[in-house]
Length: 96
Image (cartoon, rainbow, N blue to C red; front, side):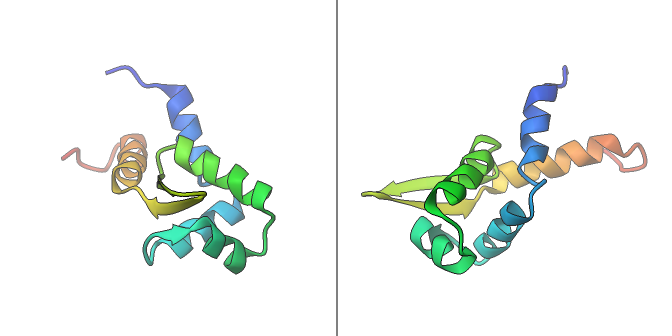
């Protein structure tokens, strides 16, 4: 199997910002509307959109549109992909 380094870089870029880590921590409790994230985080709408695009493009969050609002949740599949990628870097972890 060939490794897609561009895809892996996009995946790990999603975890390389304190604001994005905070967003993921907030989303651990469940789906949240962008408006709620804006209230909690004290960010501009454009800054939040930038962070959410990076997380969504990496497959770490799911996006559900409802009218003019976007609702975000953590993607179980995206998180599993990140964990699998990290496991591949560690030769002592058994492959399941």
